[in-house]
Image 1 (cartoon, rainbow, N blue to C red):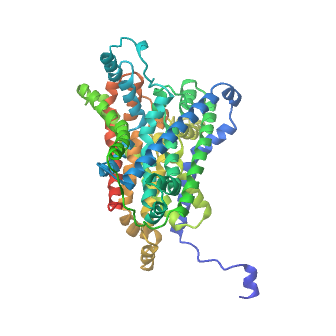
Image 2 (image 1 turned 90 degrees about the vertical axis):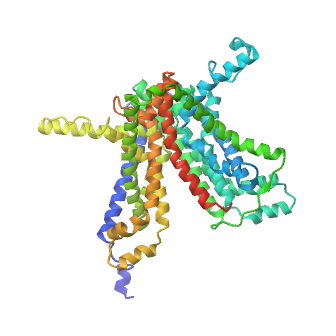
Image 3 (image 1 turned 30 degrees about the vertical axis):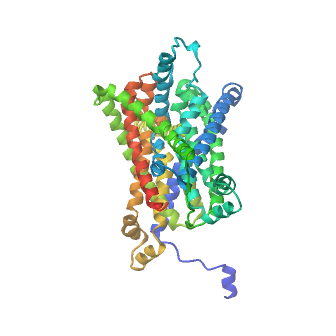
Amino acid sequence: MTAAQLARGPAKGPPRPLSERLFAVAALVIGLALVLPVLTIIVLALMPTENVWPHLISTVLPGYVLRTVALMAGVGVITFIVGTGTAWLVTMCRFPLRPLFVWASLLPMAMPGYIVAYAYVDFLSYAGPVQTGLRGLMGWTAKGDYWFPEIRSLGGAIFVLSMVLYPYVFLTARASFIRQPATQLEVARALGRTPWGAFRNVALPLARPGIAVGVSLALMECLNDIGAAGFFGVRTLTLGVYTTWLSQGNLGGAAQISAVMLLFIFVLLWIERQARRRQSFVLPAQRPRQPDRIRLNGWQRALAVVVCGLPILIGFVVPALILMHFAMSRLEDALSATYLSAVYHSLLLAVLAAATAVLLGLILGYANRAMHSGLTKRVIRLAATGYAIPGTVLGIGVLIPLAAFDNALDSFLREQIGVSSGLLLSGTIAALVFAYVVRFLAVSFGAIETGLQKVTPNVAAAARTLGRGPIAAFIEVHLPLLRPALASAALLVFVDCMKELPATLILRPFDFETLATSVFMLASLDQLEESALPALTIVAVGLLPVILLSRTLHDSHSTN
């Protein structure tokens, strides 16, 4: 190398094709747009037009925080115990109905928490069948004659949400237990450890990173909940955002409460990232030989069946039977105009959001694979964390910039040509679709990124050597190979959009009801029988990804 070359610095590689640079620019623009709602909340909270922090801190905020922490702590403990315990039993033990529990433990994921809350409040209330039956059986005549736990309470909310969210921990814990090598457990047993001792001292510490991921996901869903907490009378931060904005008209206060919620989310994301980072070192890359399952006998078999079956019964079977009973009593309303309109609106929003999320996820996934720019990759990763942001926070973060755009455009058109554009984005389904995409892009991006990892670079390189540019190689090579991943991504986003409640309540246009908002509104008016049919429709749609996930687990671990 000559002195002149040394002075110029290291030689640069050939410039990237224009198509690749366009992918990078598109990914950067999409990523920044999807991060905009979170940035809006942070800016509005730090620089509000009216500083209401002192008022919030002296009045409602401490109560919101304490109740939210209590709710999340209770849900975290119970989901950890139930999810980890059932995952260990179905993975490492042999007992009756074990194959059934492997997939049935996922069924509560199809039940939105607010729907289960409505079912149990009616089932366990003073006028419900349980207490009515107890009074008839025991001869009690008044509530003062006996004690029964109050379902509309913090404890009731913890109970219901835990039974719905424990499958998140079950999935990650079972995956961790499956990947643990048999030799470690066999050594523990050879050193005199009982099965319980081997679980406590060997299996549980090794599975701790995966379990932490599952608990973090469950807590994110718990923080996002608005229907169950509100119906149980537990005023959490999420409910505080909703009431502060819509009931009190205080947008600045709602934004500042949302900023507090973001702190919770950042902590959960940090825990999840740390757990994933540790998991990559703790667990082997390849699935090792599995240990022989422990054969349970006598009372142990019965206890295992009860431990695995009771959460399924509580989290899915009982609520489903209650809803079916209510729906059967209102069959004449099955094809009412209100119900059909809610179905149409839900399908419309879910299809639009799923198509948009898959398209944007495809662009971001391909750009993340092809680009080496650190900035682009960081923006893409940041955009893919929207799933952790509660719907109420997203609602405010989406509406404020869209309303500012609408007002600026309307003012410009009035000044220039004397025409008002009105509200083009805010207050329309466009705002809802955008919020759905921001929140559920992570689901689409994750499925597509997993699919892209199965397409080896050699395949794309071969297409390039045959004269195909990046876009042609993407269309002719990657897209056909990604069809299963794209279908899975579209299905998962579609179902999540059908169930989404907080963002829909805040952003939906006037007199625009979806299945989720119909259930919420009817249940709030104590019209539980009328809410059963739309609730069952949501549950039926929610079963689709559960079936898909069950088949995937069966295909991956059919030998276990």
